[in-house]
Length: 68
Image: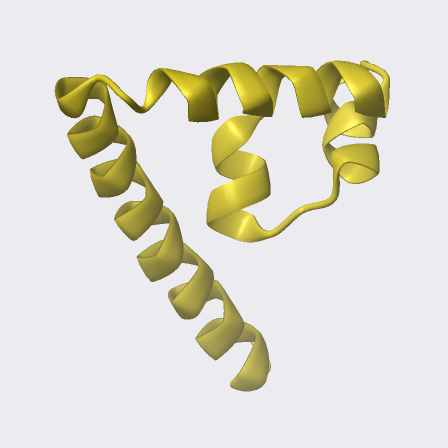
């Protein structure tokens, strides 16, 4: 849920629909993960995953721009 929100800029409502959860549950989950980023190891792993999301998002946008 966190990566869907931060990595792909999906709204809590959209993520909730995908995971069959209320938007407040998604919000809480994202807050818990964000609060856990005080751990340096977790922060590094999440930063790497966020970077991967950005690359995927970029490639997907490029594909749709090309008519794929």
